[in-house]
Amino acid sequence: MTAPPETRTPLLEARGLSRRFGSVQALDQADFDVHAGEVVALIGDNGAGKSTMVKAMTGNLDIDDGELLMDGRRVHFETPHDASDAGIEVVHQDLALAPHLDPAGNMFLGREIVRGGILGKLGFLDNRAMQAEAKRAFQDLGSAVRRVDVPIGEMSGGQRQSVAIARSVSWASKVLFLDEPTAALGVVQTQNVLDMIKRVRDKGVAVVLISHSMPHVLEVADRIQVLRLGRRVATFDGRDASVEQLVGAMTGAIEVHDRSRTTDESKGQA
Amino acid sequence: MTTTNEEVNKGGLLARTTKMQSFWIFVVLVVIIAFFTLMAPGKFATYNNVTNIVQNVSIWAVIAVGMTYIIITAGIDLSVGSLLVFSSVMSAKVMESMGGEGWTTALVGLLVALVSGVAWGLFNGFVIAKAKVPPLIVTLGSLSLALGAAQIMTGGLDIRSAPVVLQDVIGYGRFLGIPAISLISLAVVVIGGVWLHKTRFGRYTYAVGSNEIAARRVGINVDRHLILVYALGGLLCGLAGILSLSQYGTTTIAGQSMTNLNVITAVVIGGTSIFGGQGSMLGTMIGLFIPAVLQSGFVIIGVSPYWQTAAVGAILIAAVYVDQQRRSQVLRGGKPRTKGKQPTTKHPATT
Image (cartoon, rainbow over the protein chains, first blue to last red):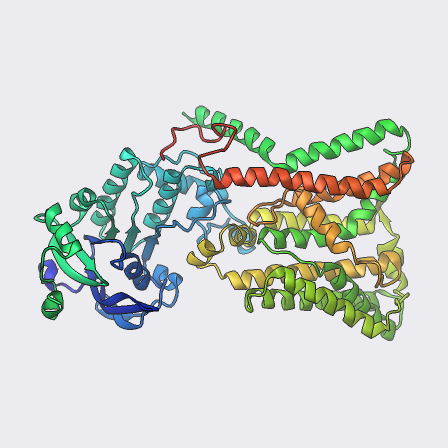
């Protein structure tokens, strides 16, 4: 395990994903890879296929062509639940929360803690334990969520986003996808999320960050993969990339080669 | 630190209680009871009258438990009255052909009624969850189907027989001065309420009604849950069917055409949102008692009972108006329209 990242088997890898919606080729032979303990930013202009890519890799969307590998083995996620079982969690742009449930209820939805003994067998919930754990998770995140027993429909957008992030962070054991996680957040909460991303990475989890904010991307990403017109057009090292390079690759102003895989050489020039 | 948190929580609890529709509707019920008690001293608040009211709502209460689950999933069940009739006809037919007035016949009858109800509930649930036909349409259809089937089986004539033990023990029987039928109903309400508010099944019921997509994303089997909820509704209609048969000694084929609307009215008055995700069993019970108390009270103070019909309609509309106001506030999140800062968001807004 001392080999440099380039020759290790990626934790999660997508090869040649394609998906067409009517006349729109949303994904066109797109590749992607992320290693354990690494933050990879997935960037691209609007309509480049970032969200489609995330959905295709997390069991939220069927693909027309291409394959998905986890630890080098081919996998297929029929449903988001399959991806969850494999340790993959997503914070969706639309958050996917139940507004009438409280933060603890949302965080543990589908994974409720039940009481001990016969009551637990009957499905009786241990709300106290769930609230205590939720409170701890929000504190770890430095989140603005102070109350774990109020319906989240009554909370601000930023607090709701905190709940969605805390939920995914808590359950992601392999890969965490964050689709625009800081869009609704203030300055302090944004910094908390970025710090949290680094902490999650340091635990050995692979983090995939989709963001429009180049400064955020450059702050946390170990590698940056650029999508344009539904395919990966460039991969940068997070340490020596610049905003100009990234924007250039996103818009097509700069011709770059995707050097992460040799077979991509020809595609990169297309 | 701990004390501060507890104080915050206490304030929050009070604030939340007063924000709950079931709290205000309870106040309305208390005011109505107080009004009739003062207007008709020695007549309204008597053992006999109270027992009467309780007995009158007992069968509806059983159905309303299932209806509360269904409406919390953002569904509706218009077929409950027909399901009750169908179950009691099936049950009466089987018991009639078995003969006998004892418990064996009665238990078989109970089983037949429950199975009949569950079968219709499963039918409703499957068509709603799998065929994606809206609940309003599906249950409107099964309303006709089940009633039609009951009429075909009986030629439209009520079966006026039930084993003596059912009529004597369940129908007219009392335990500690309380009608047996009301005790059975109370047990159903308590179990149904605890199940709704304390268990995973209940939590999923709220989640499905609150945001179906979110429920699916976290791996809840939404289709299966909807089918189970409608099956539960059917089961309780089956139970209501045999209770009704015990109480009235007849299958009441023509007598249940308003049952669905009366039960839905009670559930909605009790604060369960027709849009799903919100509601409580306690609220439903309060919502059941308001029409019943009004009816009894108007008769006792000599006002035409037609006023009850009108009053219930007005209360229903007022209750849903309040619900809508609250809903639009919730949906606007941190931006309440007129009332400024909401009492529960005590920390700085982060938007």
